[in-house]
Length: 312
Ligand code: SAM
Ligand code: SF4
Image 1: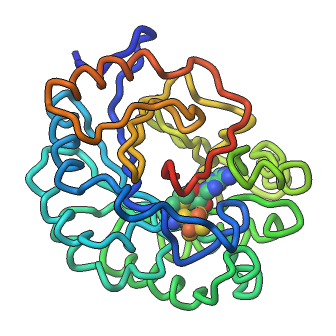
Image 2: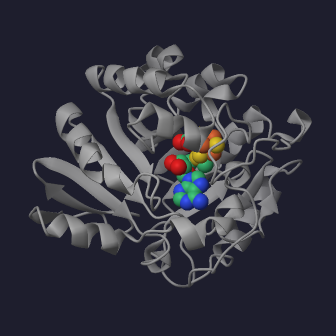
């Protein structure tokens, strides 16, 4: 039995580590154009991060996902990747906007980081630019194709937004088919800046599934119990939905988060967490025990903190 099990029987198997709050895009639901980033001196030292990951790995943590901000912007990312290869994780993944991926393909493969979640909200360069405030569509597109050729397992994260990109769902299904990758349609979560967008832009997974069902047969694909997505085979493509707002999955949640400033949190929607900075190993084991009691059983309605800081 895992040591990281809470009072409701939920086993903590997965950790998302945000390496930085900085980003080379400004997706309108994530951060404002004039975002104030934390001073780099506030970052969790990567050597300490390695210690924490190693301890959690020994306690039963099986999966690690590197995120941000844009994780590929963190100085020392390549050395950090190298240190990960000594661990015993079943799966190491990276969530990225894809802009800098080509600079890291070799290191990622060497460190066995084969699972890439690449965020792409539109297949139209203009819409991409409007959403992200960055002129990088072509670069991201090329990197997705290259990653697919190199054998990475790719999931595209596409946030559904009414009257912005909801008409592109079928094009994304074609993308999944063409490049043999999975596309996951995400509900816009009430977090940080997105709180203001909810009323006009939110579209539920059910609405999209109902529309698709009028034209296609959706064959459910069985997922792990603690998976955040539910998936279908549709027209030969693997698609998933992450319905964090309409169908919260707190009862099966197996995830903790470590923020770029070193705060370990039991839930994305809880501001409260405990810093691992300036701690001894003994103190950290006390922190891990305390955190087991901090995971809510039900979905917290909304939060004001910023997604890039906690780590998406
Ligand atoms: N910069 C990287 C990226 O965009 O993939 C990693 C960090 S980003 C915060 C991680 C994921 O969170 C992205 O797929 C992004 O689309 C998603 N995200 C950010 N804000 C969100 C929101 N309000 N609701 C749903 N997903 C959100
Ligand atoms: Fe950057 Fe990712 Fe946030 Fe977009 S969603 S601004 S790419 S951190």
